[in-house]
Length: 181
Image (cartoon, rainbow, N blue to C red; front, side, top):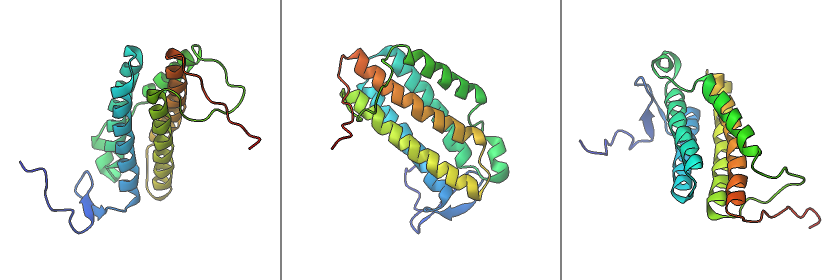
């Protein structure tokens, strides 16, 4: 089986269920950015040296495949894919609460960065926010399961505390925002 099909050479692609749309369609933007987020999290996993955090990130990658499948499946085709369950959102919330116990409370804004893995988790957070915005945009045009948006919203919060946790684990000082500049 060849990896290239040539079916997208004219700027169109197929959604789950067979419908053809332009590669600049809002649905493609949304699930493409979820795919990008998944890849960035893969880079994070390659940098993280903490087994518990790696396991959390692996779960997230699996969840993101489900969200991507739902976003690639318009209308009735969406019924054929599992997507993300509300229990996954609850899991993210528990993880945020648990990790928050291991980091100092924020008293002011911090600049993204620190340890290399933490900096990459901050980048993942920003890609997640973009995926969320594009999914919201798609949801204003077509039906999107609300769990997809809620999951991405909660995930960006988790990625933020994970970045801070990595900095704490590696004894890397966070840089506070200097608002007087």
